[in-house]
Amino acid sequence: MSHHEGESYMTQRPETRADYQESITRVMLFIQARLDEVPSLEEIAAVAAFSPYHFHRLFTAYTGESLSTFIRRLRLERAANRLRQTFDPITDIALDAGYETPTNFGKAFRQQFGQTPTEFRDSKHVLDTAVFRQSRTELLKIVKPNLVNLEPQPVLFVRQTGPYGEASTAAFATLMRFAYQNRLMHKNSQLLGIVHDSPDVTEAGHLRYDACLTVDAPIEPEGEVGVQTLAGGRYAVFTHTGPYENFTATYRLIFSHWLPQSGERLREVPTFERYHNRDPRRTKPENLRTDIYLPLE
Image 1 (tube, rainbow, N blue to C red):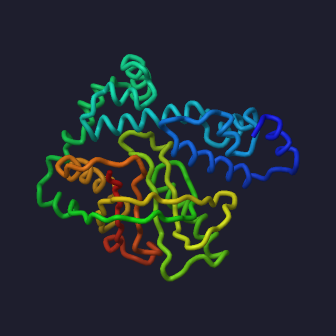
Image 2 (cartoon, one colour):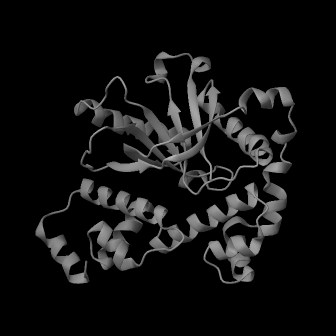
Image 3 (cartoon, helix red, strand yellow):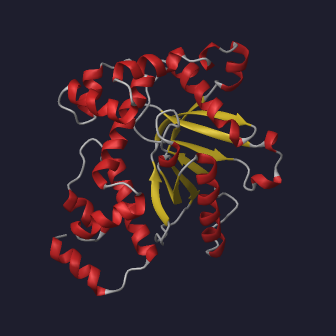
């Protein structure tokens, strides 16, 4: 879409808040999928159906970050997770994050995290955490996954950003209201949550959470309610029993104990959760059951 086409789109009808929200959601998914080869502003504006000039302002207004800051942060956070979870050479991680030299990468990384990549790896690597040194009995209760192959799954979703507890509550409130109004809840419907970021790397205010509902037939996105497809492929599935507040401990055990000794590598798609209890308020916290799907290469 050219600059002028975008402007004529803008003047064809008054835009509503829901239209803007829908646009931003489309763009965030587009960028996530293209983090290795960041699309041009023209491509992004075309996905948003706005002119590049207007889109920049719109994105910053809705997310609190400029487009370039958002992309740079996601790439640096992905690099930080690789430093924690692998022993890949820092030169390779720098290149994959879009930096031609380790020096430039080191400078940007230190600005974001307050440490050099080497210091960050030394202090945060999953193989050297207090959790890793806990008793084997406690570890083994959680870290026996099933390995499964999934087909791609279309889902309706609502994204919220912020601490996961608050973000998930707010996102599901909006999603379930839409689902019940449109009679989309069926016996086989599944409630899922996509957790895009690690609280050990990303600031709480920037954590991205998508509340999801599986759907069989295509549905038009509407305002905050978007559509995306969960990636198929291999996953390790861990079962978490008990309060959602304990997720952090479970994730740390998976990453610090199971992953390093499994011989597996993570795939570049998000981890997601499947909730067995449709209404957590009617279930005792200790009886809540959640499956955690970890994507494997």
